[in-house]
Image (tube, rainbow over all chains, first blue to last red; front, side):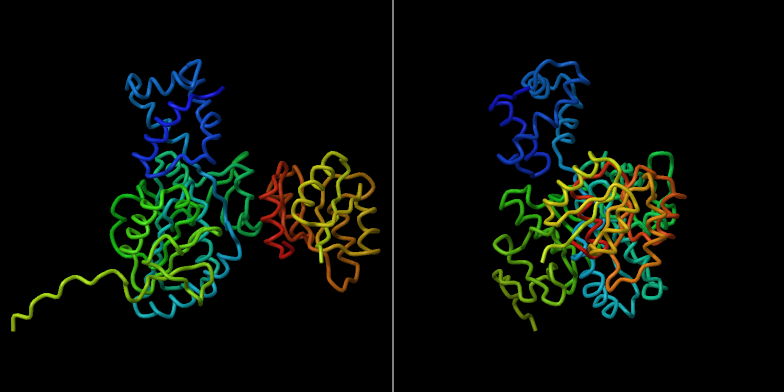
Length: 285
Length: 122
């Protein structure tokens, strides 16, 4: 089932307008596969006709459903294990010392898809009760997709999903088997909040000591990526940590962050913001 | 030096699929059709990791694990149980018998890779 160039352009425009994401040449092949279930559901013979229905607005929810289908929800537990080990030993170790007085940490899994990353963080904290006893750890997972957020909240995973990256000990300790699915235990789910959020929008309220935004920014144009880096920076304290995907970097994309040499694979806000300073306020004294 | 993996399964098809995936992960792969063959192979030249089926003729996966536990190794192979059995009782039994990780069929390359990383042989 092929789709015309014009229809792809319409979908690409819609995707960018709603999410900031680009439909690059590399992802274009996914369109036909991703939208096929919608063709079946709405009994439409061609993808061009489906796009026509989206444009006409005849089926109001169709645009949302097409966007949802085009989003990449790929994720798994402890994705890039070495990076999570670095975060746990170096990054969280440092923040543990820095927040020893307040005993509060806030963590944001930005673009959390179906929740595996947020639950990974929750398990990392749960693994060290002696370190985090008496602390308030707030873990927030956000994603653009309401469907993904609903799945994350439910914490239910197929047999295939549950074993992708998840150590068997964690699976036995933190998940309950329910027929062919595994559900995050109530105790684990209680430690994580999820909500729908668009990375192009103002960040969730408050500052986050650790932000994970992994394998998301690659779908944005350079301009949008810069905007999102700025949004994230505005939601972090000076000593906060930003963790990107294994193949991602800030270099060449933003001047708001620099590599954190104590925690490889993580980034910190640049201490001296290189942007021009605002004009000084006149001294009225 | 290439890491070595012994695939233990009585199904030739499963061994073939596993071998294909493992070779893309840069493992040197050897095969055994049951637990006894696997035990002999480990005694001769212990691999870094064993991908182990549960139900096999001659010697099952669990029997192999118990027998392996009696052997002396300079470096004991890591064991990843790889079966269609997904009940908690089975999984616990495998871990209790000495398995380091557990993967349920069907699996894909990323799942296997993540398991190898978890046992430290990636």
